[in-house]
Length: 231
Image (tube, rainbow, N blue to C red; front, side):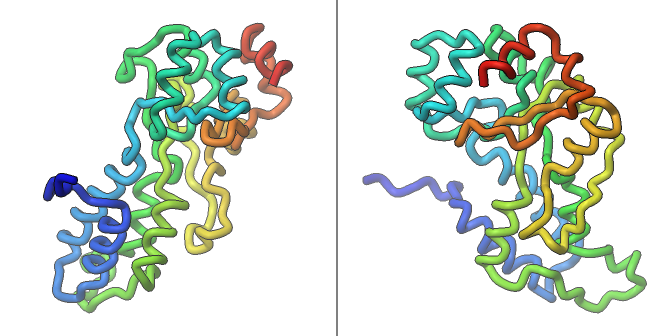
């Protein structure tokens, strides 16, 4: 077997290096920030940015059939183990109807805003703290760092119209309780407060992770209402 390219890193490598960098008292805050920003960009796109995540299970097969995806396309997808795991219903429908212009129709959305993660991991800058003393971050080990990234650093494919409903919603959960917090809180609040119609599926399980409020369902239209009735 040929050796892996030198530029290739596993998620374990990334978590290991990130932890060692953010806990290194000899490194400048700006250096730590640059590395963290790169990790926050790369981690949620690890398995693709606008690629479908499809596994050959009954829930996903049913979901694909609802959206008139051809059996050939399903076969091709079922052979690919990776891709973006979380998709909104509207994005799924647009994809199945032939929309492939990812930059025009779709948005790769960071479920927990990067600014929230950045503030938690690194804390305020030395300038804002008014001190150049080293700041002790909340992540205490490499395994802790990886678990944090796996739990919090998620991406979802949604439509740009759905993104507009999310833009004004702040992340209201306490990220210091990241092991128990609701990472989808912005989506639920957008549905509740802005009467949005965002439904998000976990394509690894076929389950909904976010559903709209009953009052918002009529905004789906006939096709989506049929999908709801069949699922």
